[in-house]
Image 1 (cartoon, helix red, strand yellow):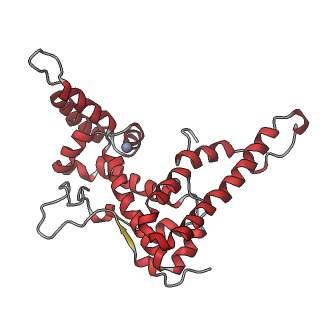
Image 2 (spheres, helix red, strand yellow; image 1 turned 30 degrees about the vertical axis):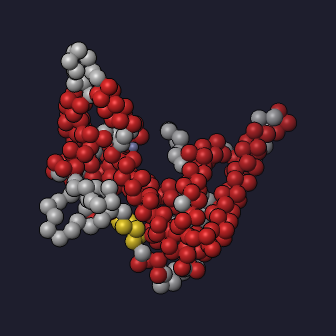
Image 3 (cartoon, protein in one colour; image 1 turned 90 degrees about the vertical axis):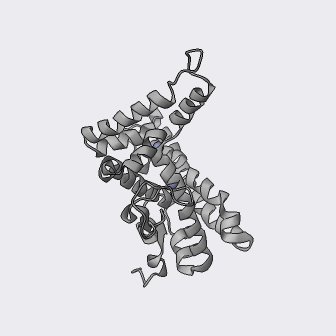
Length: 266
Ligand SMILES: [Zn+2]
Ligand SMILES: [Zn+2]
């Protein structure tokens, strides 16, 4: 069915507030705890998330944002000392470091690391009167190893995206249809969506929303279970030479469904 003049096309998920007039630039903290970033990094039209109907739409939104932020961090942000100040303190997790290495030049990664490592020297390895790192420094070390600039941006953006989804679902029949046409929701994103749904879509709509979301999960889970069982059965000697059908990648698809990530090397 060709897309009609979708009202949802006009709905951009505003991931970051625009810089207010007169603000000096990116990297400042905005009122709601996000960091001001350029507008082209900050907005994803909801149609781009839901219209492809491939895989979990929330994973798609996460991937888009992750791509843009890691590209930005190793590119344009090199010229933004304010952003660097934040990344020096927050650091990055393993998956996002890996993406940055793939996206950015070795020099830009080295420059990010240079000032980040320096920050560790001053905040984590400071010595107290006894000449050893104190409690505060251990806490700083823990915070640093557990935080990631990209994860934080995504988390912040996800809350706003979910608000948009709840709002559209409540008032647009067309969006409800589009939502139900998604191939599936992965388990982590289904959980996150339902967690906020009572408040997001309201008590009156909650039942119908939860039903629509859980239908997407249930249908996909049914298929996955059949495929995994079929895969296992293919190792029975009685099935030698049989047809694997759709079951060949059922392990990878199950892991993706359970964790929202495609296993490494696939
Ligand atoms: Zn997902
Ligand atoms: Zn991360």
